[in-house]
Image (cartoon, rainbow over all chains, first blue to last red; front, side, top):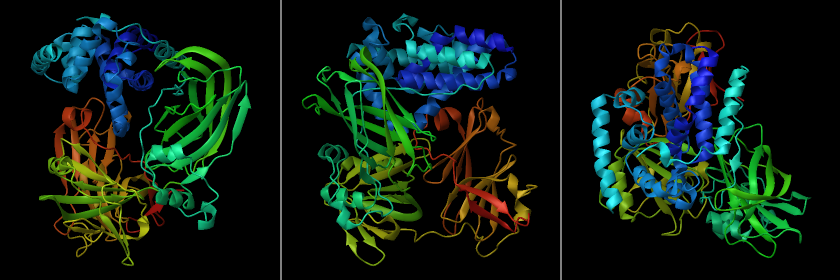
Amino acid sequence: MEREDFLQKTLETESTLFHVAFSILHEEQDCADAVQEAITKAYAQREKLQNSDYFKTWLTRIVINECYNLLRKKKRYTNLCEETVADKEYLQEYIKEEYLDLYQAINKLEEKEKICVLLFYMEDYSVAQIAEVLKIPGGTVKSRLNRARKQLKGLLQE
Amino acid sequence: MSKEIFKEIPQGFHEQFLDTLQQLESEQKPTGVKKFAVKKAVLLVAAIVAAMGTLTAGAVGIFKWHEAAKERLGVSEEVADKLVMEGVAKEEYAVVEKDDVTIEAVMSVGTDRGYYLLFRVAASEKLMLTENTSFAQLEVVSDKEFAGITCGMMPDSLEGNAALFEVELLRKENMDYAGEEVGIQFIHFAETDKVSVTEVLVESTWEIPITLPSTQESRMFVQSGVFTADFHQLNITGVEISSSVIRLYGEHWRDLYHVTDKQSIQPPTIRYKDGTLLQPHAGVGQTGYNGDTQTEEGYVEFRLDVTMDVENVEALLFEDCEIVLGESMEPYGDAFENPCNMEEVIKAENPEDLKVLYVYHTNHAVIYDEQKLYLWDTVCNHAEELVDLKEIGYNAEAGGEMLVSPGQMMRILPNADSDKVYIVRLGYGLDAENKVIESPRESAWDNANWVVYTMDVPYRVVSEDGSFAGMRLEEVE
């Protein structure tokens, strides 16, 4: 993939990359660092991407991996993140007020289900695209979405 | 639901995003300059780690611990004095006065995670310090990278027109910062809400130089034994001790959980090699737990109110059992009786190509080249092939990673696209059997819940005569 093409396509995915990173890391600066690292890695490996149609899912996957890498490095301090998500005042900086309860409920889901919900409902990814991002079968994506829907219903009724 | 749930992308993120693209456009490697926004009250209490002796007992009286720091770090009088003697806690004297703000360094303390720094901030009559004033940004000027920074005004510390400001620098594993000179830059005095700057009151930068105090890496013992507590028996695989923290590693985290869940284990009495005992005060130590659901590896942690002389600890005496440190350390497999020729096992063309992933028990090393990963007993000159890296598609340039956890369990992610992770479990004792388990990436890597030891180890493999028989580990300065 040519450099200009890479930069243009990356620019187009900015909001998705932030949303995905924020849902995992909850800290703006961590998101910026993880996305920066992911873009740098992706750029170095851009020749390996055979079909540019898969650019967005490919880059999203790298960002998700970087976020988890960062989380692992910060493993001992993750209770900070938990506090952050519970802090509505903090979340209001990033999430629209009317969706705060929903966002907090989504964050109570298991990590693997949370990512599926985020990509499917907020980023308009198809089941096939999510399967490509997470490298899991489409059926698994569907069952995770189904399970997540049930849990969300329960969480929002509490 | 739709993506409208999010507000606009934050400016700070957007700027760094554009910077990254611009640097790639000009073919520069992004610099990754990190800016740490000031947050309030984000410090967590850290355990103290003691180190080399630098002061005499008489000098301790001269040093005054700031009461707020003592309380914040949960340090008893006894530990406080000892930390001063050992050079882990020290008074700071640097002051910078500029643009109606005076910042005074108060003290620095080495913790188990890095460094706790305490400052006093005072404003002139032209400015009013409140619960909502702080600095817009904090940066650390240093040749060495830190794993992270947390900082903020200490809650309830406002007195007159002055308040205390805390900074915690989190160190990277295996990196030594003792004696390192760093500059703590406080940038722009500002009005803030809980998380962000609402108005910059003074545009300026104040820098305070700090020479970081000593810390000491914890010591890890390979251990086999049974730990009994509260009618639960746990198979212990490792013990880690630093001056005020003891961790018992075991393979069955659920059992560990049940034990800690009871909240009934008291910290152990420490027995030194000369037979003397050190008794933490009952009920003051804490137990903690961290475990890995995939590998069932976890630990029980005790944070003590006394400091140990780590080098001279012989045993940990619990109510129901005694753990003698290092007693079970034995060579791997039958290597001791049947030393083998390294050349038969390691086919690398040159020892200089071999890198060290991990060294433990002082004479066991996990080494690798582009082809394979080996376990090497440097005393018995025995080596065993653990993983054929080429066969599993390992490629560091394509995002492959090898990490080690405290219980000497390694995980190998062959490359960024791999859906598999290889977990290497090293046995111990005479019946040692090393296993390589293939696991789904999703559970064993992406969602793993484990403490990471990086492979940044201060050793390399050398062979003066170029032969395998002459191979040895050399410490890197």
